[in-house]
Image 1 (tube, rainbow, N blue to C red):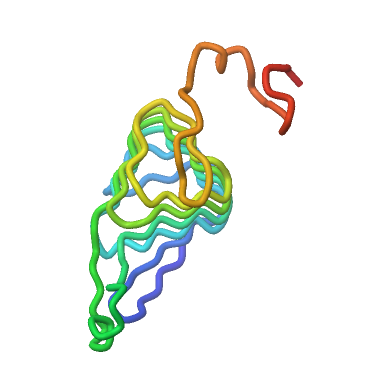
Image 2: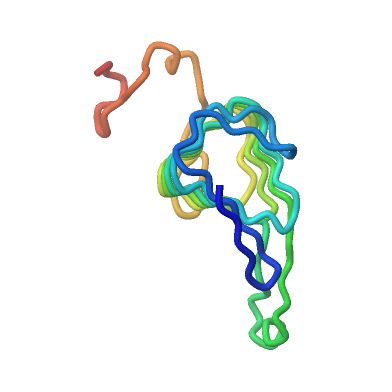
Length: 151
């Protein structure tokens, strides 16, 4: 784990750790390489959360108005990731977001708003694509463009 500080911001990067636990999280069953957590505010990570490679969770941001940024102003808002969430590689979770229990965030998504429980959400900005349902128990992997067919 690496820590650094720049203007009060703290980042943590976990590299290829099969199991990670910290005082502010539950049991993380897998954190792939380059998990970055900018934790100027609380980040709650539930149990059995999976992180793909290069995931960023940030609690800090800056005002949009340039005059408000001129003095270095920033804000920090907590992030909440509930139990059994899977966040795909290269996803970014923005300040103030809650990701509900059992949800999947697609690779490359930028999560700018709350995601409800037990859904698959994808895109920039990240939006709900469908619920996690009984059909998901029959499949472990789906090739792109082959929905409904087991590989």
